[in-house]
Amino acid sequence: MATTYRIHPAASLGAATETRVVHQVHTALKYLFTVVPIVAGVDKFTNLLTQWDAYLHPLALGLVPVSAGTFMAIVGVIEIVAGVLVFVRPRIGGFVVAGWLLAIALQLLIGWRFVDVAVRDIVIALSGPLVLARLTPLVAASNHHATDRSEVA
Image (cartoon, rainbow, N blue to C red):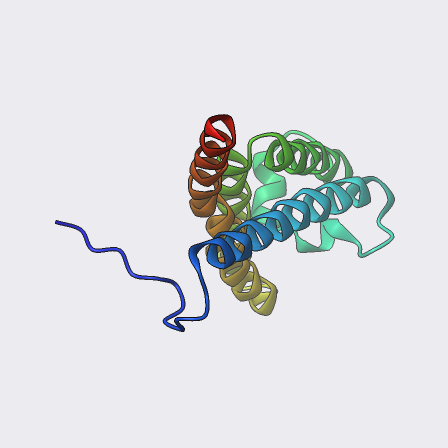
């Protein structure tokens, strides 16, 4: 039999406070992982933040039949779609963004280039978007229960 423990052991915090905190974290992660991939995706067309094709492993460019600029434009579109997906379907989008960040990190680690960025992307993937994906069913269930209670009242 599973046992459920309160998130915070303080007796002064009730279930409503815990639920509110979970909702706040979920909302912050949802907006963060909507906006950042969209901004990064749009920047693949402008290169205002960085010169993105510098992060491409030369082997990757040899495997695709397009230029680095075209490849990065395709990546930009994928990132924009991933950001929108996080907003519309945060559970699926969270897993997609986590996977995308891990794929980027793998590409960087294979060439042992920008290892600091690869490590950062791994940490981000295993924290933010993964937590968002895992929290989404909890938030949906608590919203469902709150709706049920308001209909009874």
